[in-house]
Length: 322
Ligand code: ADP
Ligand code: MG
Image 1: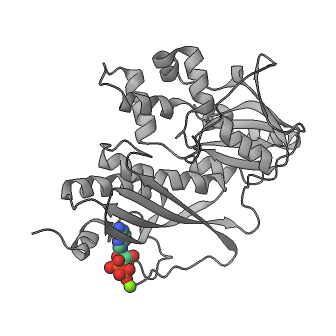
Image 2: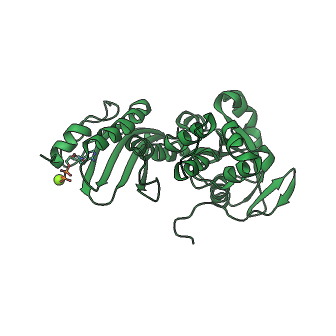
């Protein structure tokens, strides 16, 4: 007997993620009832992952579940917010219980350790697609924005951008000998770790923040133009992982770090007057971020190599560009 929609929800989604006291009514009614904290603002984000576009069609269900939540957590982190409640709209070509159990395991594990309760959703049949809406909180008036940076602010990026793009290439390529480096890179694509703690700690320190999902250069362009300025980025300062260097060599590693997607790291600007406070409160070796450039008055993003401007063409992933 195939599972009914009702049974499917009860078995896999009714009790997924963290248990939260601020959910008077969760899954099972026409809507969830949620208790908002009085002195905070709600931050709402949503992202869709479509099979074949945002992940390879044959990706593991656990990875799809993890990523569908992780990409939303990353947006919440970039706002300096704390995640709370998720809604999940799932379109499935068929009901495969093994797939559903793995999907729920990947989603549920990340939700629990992020303090996120799944409070509702929708289940339909059709080509595989996963939409997650995530709601979080931020103290009133304190959300981090893309706008807010000024010429002279230092630019920092967390983690080691480029890894996920290299991992996706390995996933899509012909099966090859697995090394420690290729395994690490594949994991970085399949199971991104959004920078939740860093995002929250950047409130009051960063002047602007964005998560790097479509490539560092492209996302830097968005932050700079929202802030009404330009930026210069020094390629020699890019934090490249040992795995990326081992798998790709330094030239290609640098290129992937600049234009590869799916990193889910944070890119943020810090005014000179707050840099000492940043470095004191969040030691870079412990929090894994590095200074890569600065915002400038001159519009546009300039890529430097040892201080000299170099030409750089492609600037990120755009679903509607050619
Ligand atoms: P309705 O027809 O009123 O929209 P549904 O039968 O679609 O209700 O859903 C019943 C309950 O199950 C609702 O609380 C809904 O939020 C929840 N739900 C449905 N699909 C999912 C899902 N994929 N994940 C989490 N909750 C879901
Ligand atoms: Mg209803």
